[in-house]
Length: 338
Ligand code: SAM
Ligand code: SF4
Image (tube, rainbow, N blue to C red; front, side):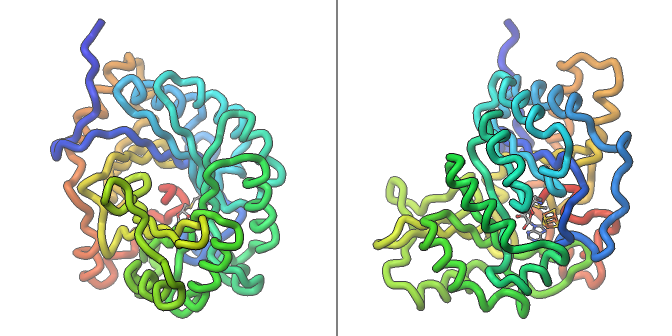
């Protein structure tokens, strides 16, 4: 048998995690993610097929990738998702499948996804006020998401995590309300620093600012320690807990405290492009490679050569210094998957 070859980039980081955006479409239009009128959706034949995704994951799984996150756009709007999830779970070596969703369609899909093998789910929630939820999502209904969260917990998803993006002047007055919400549901809520991409330029509230605000309000809000060090979930979320409650508050700080040194991930976009970093625009056409008559080993070699180009850290702050440079022409978050 051939010697096992892991995927290691030129900075010594082992790639074990693939994030797959299965669709660029969405039933919401969150202000920080998509333009108001939506994007020109990819045609059916431009979207990477489930078959190609499964083959690609299989190739990577033979070389050490064990974790896949399904994202979008809104993953629940793509037909065939439950069967796709089940097929992912059958790939040898894939031990961890998770999904990020806006939660609005969970009533329809939670049970099916759970029985197909999905056990971990992240649900995005940016306001606890109905009118504001609508203002941010432009077309969503808060009640659907809250129902989705309760149902996800009841169905048995574990953990159910909440992703919250705070935007200055829009929902940053809800920090303490979100913490009360996390405590009420004893849930893991993560504040993700707002990334001004896709033309939405506004100042980011840093994780530190949010953390300080929570500490001023709650006694016993402390870093969760593992082996004497602060717990860091999935290499990105710094976790805090309370003495009197099981809720966990995480901070994901791609801008103020980037986690590039521990980056173990690649991204596959809805159009079938491999992206080495969320913040670098370069994309490589996997769909084209898969459509050629290449053996799996050739596909692996292609990826293996490509990941040597993975930068040691992202260049977001440099980009931010150049006026106008944040307007990444076609790169709204929905196609890349966050
Ligand atoms: N539709 C799903 C959802 O909203 O959860 C999955 C796709 S969405 C692109 C994935 C994650 O990216 C969400 O948690 C969303 O809040 C986050 N996101 C999108 N645009 C962002 C931005 N500009 N800054 C920070 N996070 C962003
Ligand atoms: Fe859709 Fe998710 Fe983007 Fe909101 S963040 S527009 S729900 S893809």
